[in-house]
Length: 173
Image: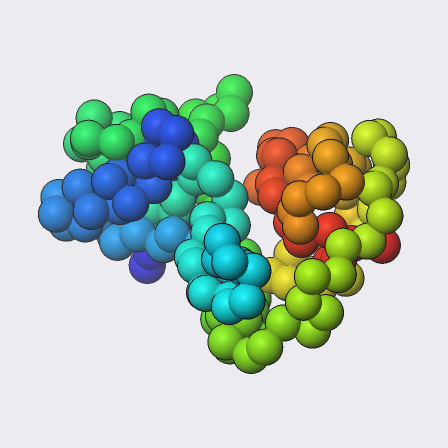
């Protein structure tokens, strides 16, 4: 039976940690989603992959595998722990995140709904609900919105911690 833990990586180090952990014989899950971004000339969109939880990946352990080697692997800064030791994530939570990421990737392959549409700036501290994307249905709080970027930064409680996550401004209400 697979036990899942959360690995905290260096900035932008999710891919490095994932490769190193897999090379050491661990199973990993790097939740990401596809975003359609306008390229410089503003006429075309390209699909680019973004981490769902920046600096975090999930580590799957089989019976007999320990965390010591994983915690000392290149790219890993720490294993998410609480007062009782390393925190475990349920297999059902991992499956739900996988399903949400897969559904979002299929949707991102389509043309953008409102290309160039940017909703009005949302004041910092505002309580919002995510209405689209892999985090659909979750409540959060606006941490940063410059009113120009297509993304805003929100904080939400996931996996027992408050995390700051970028989401599309059009995906919140």
